[in-house]
Image 1 (spheres, rainbow, N blue to C red):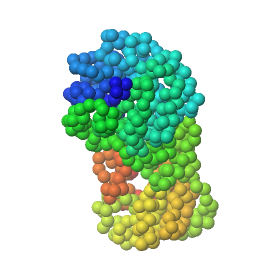
Image 2: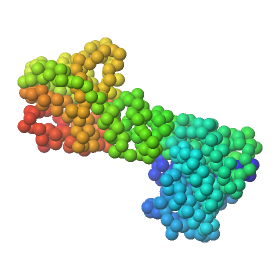
Image 3: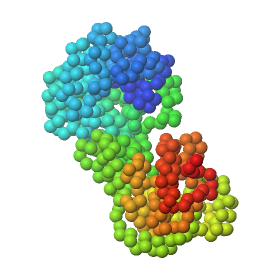
Image 4: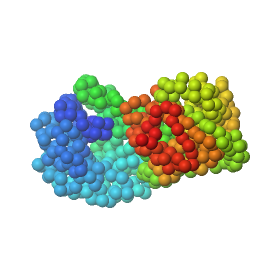
Length: 531
């Protein structure tokens, strides 16, 4: 069993959750717990020359810094390693192994950098370190590319080559495909490792599959305490150790790992949770970079079904190499469901030309000042719109819909209480019935700004085209970093708080720049009012 190595990378991969700020006492305690548990290899963090030394963080600018945090600790039987993301820590920052607390260094790299990265691994080996070549996004390798990596590994002879399932895409079939390809072709002196992520909840199961193989070379399996780690998290080391104790005759002290969960790790779980969720499922099921999912979900305009369809349009190398401009173009193309809207626009123009319009938004003041709004509507008899919601009590002439996600939340309400809906062409009807009017989404968006489909601005553009006499806004409070932005808490979007100043200035500038084309006044207080 001495050829099967269990590796803990909590202090490195777990650091994505808390910016590696575990606190010095936790760094020491986690290290000591994992040592006492009998774990074979302990990864103590990143080596990154861009980050200054901080005794509370497990990300350090050079190997000398490792000694300042861990140097007084007893490693007992454990091999101690650090990690370098190739290109972030030059060889000048690496002491000879004989002068370092580290026994080994793991180097992560993407496949297009394999030539340079493996040469760097060779330089580290020359300094005396056990070097691990970590193949980022292993599922992106073709068989020919993997065999080329094997050629490089056989030249430089690292301690181990590890399959890194960066986006949690692996099931046992493709895990074993890469496993066999590497095992059959690597030099016998090179170990074989696996680093799981849990997007499909397959991390633990894949580790069991890996460990079920009887091979002559060293095998290294990674885990983290409580599965703490980037994105959907990692295979929990306490589960891997339990399996190895039961099935392989090892004697890891799992109680030490559980103590670490309770004393050191659980404090980081809230609010920065990790583990399986729908976000990472969408990324894994579409074989794509999680940032694409984050980008589309942050739009808050798409249903999950639409997000899934859009992710399915990602092509080739772009799927795992995140490109914001690429996904933005796909988003606009997807939303731009061109229709012939001439008849609907003409009908609306006829109905609204010369009219006074009241537009009600879902801000908190819509509810707080409801009496004021109702009295205004009763006294002035405007044509009344609401935007992506249906107000209570107020008689509503039209609902303007530009957001598929909001529509799905309203569809049941529409079936019980029909509304006259003007929808942009990106919103697809449910089986409850067709919209009264549809207008082209592309004609109303602003391609020159960051958030291109602000719903209020889109409706105002439409009303300018229809030559309305005036517009009064109620419940468009604008955005606040601290206060609630919607009258119902379940409508809140986290991203708007991050973009509050931008959103407020964008709408304010739009109103100012178009004041000669559209007369707009505010019935309730708003951040959009030009001071």
